[in-house]
Length: 444
Image (cartoon, rainbow, N blue to C red; front, side, top):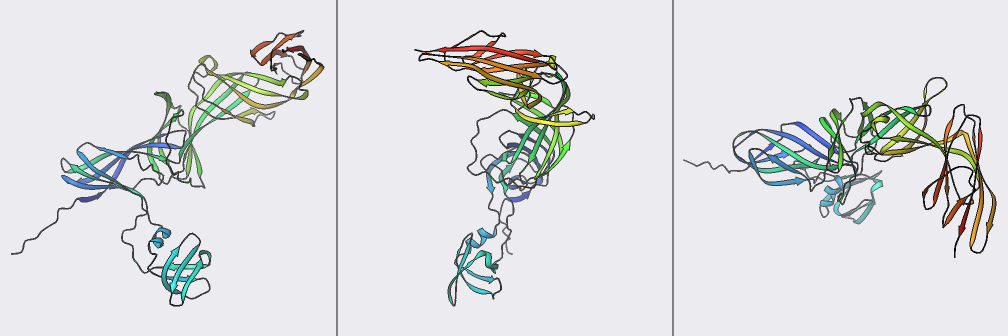
């Protein structure tokens, strides 16, 4: 009677299902994925578990997995996916068929293949072809079990038979988020603020029923040596959710965007962070100059948001772009500009440039300038005109370098630093006001 010998090989099992997942997205274009994976009917003892649903832009040195009832003996990361270039490069020295455009098939030994040329040795000698003039390149070989996407596998030792759950963690590139603010201003002091997060999945993986978290803050990151190119042709969808929950994450802030049903590859989704919030702001018209500069121009419009509860905020505001809107005479909302806003902690403020005012203009003249061997003196006149129908607040900023003193000023001024002073005035509608002063410098 013959004995039947069965080799004891580790059983290869593919992941049958995956349930809960969380993605934490950072401002540097990377994300941390925490994925629960289920394998069914895992035998007791050694097995090989395989998981294929990973993105091309995964950071190869980051994946790790934890099992409750198994020991991980080894982990493999396989990213040798099939490409025709790699395949035919491996066939150098072998017999291939080349079909030139408008020509007959030529058989020969493949000597070289590059991005632009193919060289073969046929019975008639050595010939090279430009790739753009080739209809096809053919090999009679067959590929067994080609790999079309990266995958991870683990050699494990299970304590008991049954379903096996693993918690996989890895980092990837090409997933980003940014904040877009929308401020609708209403007059000189009040407006409505909405903050939205634009989450872009430029990776190769679809994320379904995933809890998404957004981290604000600049971390120290050692970037991968090769960053995969982001796909183009992104599509954008919008989702409205309640105000996000925010919490501290060490020295950073983390925002919970909640469960997102679909974050598809090459798509973006917009979700609500805050708002609409009724906020107060300070609107100032700024005229900024230096020393002997003479000019006449509209004044710059600046809006200052104070991140306090009394002004309608008091929440950590992440950095982002802020779009400005106002109501037109016909009652609709119109776009009036945008600016970048940095991170604004609670209790701090942010100043937003909103363009230049059409009806508020400034003119600066140097009425007299006297320069001596060890001194310099200039008489400055500034006029501000308000053609609006409401009063406005004006700040006139003057930059003066060196060792200076101010004298004969028509209005009180404040010294901001060693090279800057400013005058603040309130200007009624239809009025014009003159500000004059003299600055004097002396040196040895």
